[in-house]
Amino acid sequence: METLANFDQRVIVHSAELEWIPSPTHGVDRRPLDRVGGEVARATSIVRYAANSKFPAHVHTGGEEFLVLEGVFQDEHGDFPVGSYIRNPPQSKHRPGSAEGCVIFVKLWQFQPEDRTHVRLQTQFMASVPHHDHPGVSMTPLYKDTMEEVFLLQIEPNGEFAMPLIEGGELLVLGGELTESDDVLVKHSWLRLPIDSQLDLKAGNEGVKVWIKTGYLADVAAQIERVQAVI
Image (cartoon, rainbow, N blue to C red; front, side):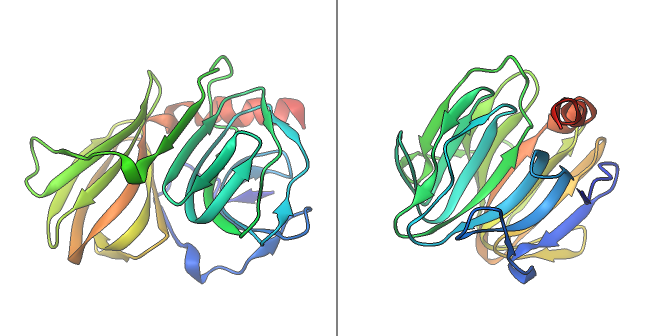
């Protein structure tokens, strides 16, 4: 299965407009953003857990990264409310679910195979840092290594932010509205830009908050190969 699998193209998905697709686990539905593979896949998705739904215990051979958008996500490691940012590295395992229901933004099979770093952050309690080059813009760093960088970006009403994406990147709008290259993105709109792109954002009248990841597309071919090796 392939969904928006040409990583040389700029793509936008307004995820709130997509239909929910049932997963093999009852009560867990998905909105695919990009995907290469079947149930084992290099994938980016919005996933919805109904109240009292659970996935069976499983190992994340290729790693899992997610951000809680609504409700409370749970596993044997704890309760993770809205704003929780989690990185479960390759070979980690858990039994995820949600007593009250939740929605998460999740990425699978996009880690370096040797990575063993767990990250569990409650971003709603983290301070943001004013950007030194962009007045009215602040950042909350979430993760950085030699391959990628992940952070939250907040832009004040009608503010602007620009940065080169030499190795590609993506963003998810968490709140508010923005314009990027004449396209309007709203809450839970997702944008992916290819290698050697330029990100040019202008916030709407109420400001905007976005999740941004840069750099990882330089490794996308190897990520796909690692998935195909286990299918």
